[in-house]
Length: 193
Image (cartoon, rainbow, N blue to C red; front, side):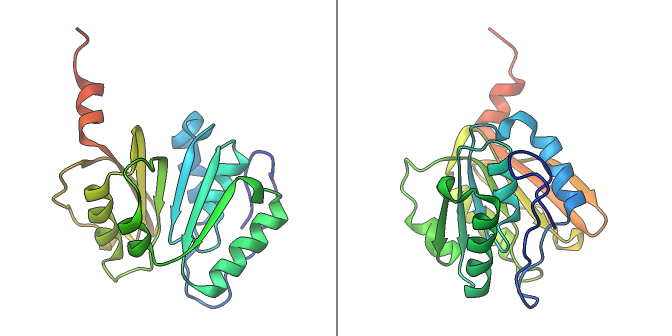
């Protein structure tokens, strides 16, 4: 596991000891950031269930303005700090040692992110619960995107009010689901006046 591109390119990232996390593979991470492209530059990124911090760190390396890492596991928090130190990206990082749902419940309406990455432990329904919480709070900028990393068999269509599924990409045993604000989707497809 390493940083693929940007100012920390090639830096190795430590895994979280044990099996509490399921880090994104370099192949999937590379594909994800190819899809995001220039959206990352100057972006505010929220990495939920941050684990190793790999996605937020990749975003920072590629020019994100800030990354907020939300994680409650002590071993994972220690790993995130070590990885930020090793990549020299700590200055633009905020680490929140808290439960994701508690964090989302306390978010202020003015707190918005361009990219929100959700990679919870598998088979506990946490991805759907997180998306519903994000749907209620909508802490996305108008052109923002929520990306959920799940095992393909976990996927089910969700009845959401403010978020809409815009894309899905499967890479072996990993499925990435992309959600955007419903009104942003409508305005993007609306004919010009």
